[in-house]
Amino acid sequence: MYSPGASPLITKQHVLDGQRRRRKLRLRWYDSLQPGPDFYLEVKWRDNRVTGKHRLQMRSSEPLSSLSYHGIRQRLEGLVPEPLQRDLLRFSEPILIVQYQREHFATDDGLRITLDYGITYYDQRGKHRISTAFPRRLEGLIVLEGKTPVGREAELRRWLHPFAPRATRCSKYVHGCSLLGHIRPSDL
Image (cartoon, one colour):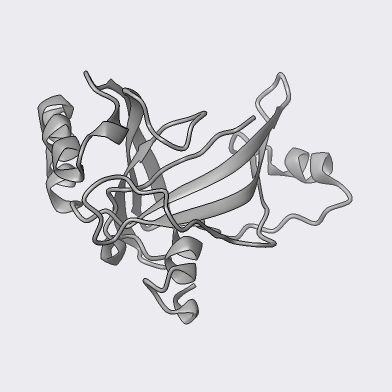
């Protein structure tokens, strides 16, 4: 399954790992490196240990790839519900596109695992429109993420045996910012 994700409308100062309170805005599309008219707008947030995500399925009258970043923002201003307008106004500098392939695994009773690989980044700083020139691949990073309903973590550990899972953070976005020189590797 080819599943590129994208984060072109994120400002790095608001989303570096380790911040107790943070929000990030991202656009996400699937099955093509260039976005079409169908996409998702996501606002991910964290307040200490509590996290959440607002996810809106959206459609533009034109493919996003044919619009400038200014044009994308103007379209979003007319589509985003009022509670999320402040996030759209705060996050205006495009930073990067993250492309990767993802495999999904799930049980019928709620245990899920995703495997992300082939992670590639496209620098968007200073760009006026979506650019997929000069890809930078992050060699050797494979992200295996398990998700389970609260209280069933032991089942996930058994499912992953003989691997010894550990709870840790791993942000493809932060790794990309480091690879592209937007942050120092010590910020990881």
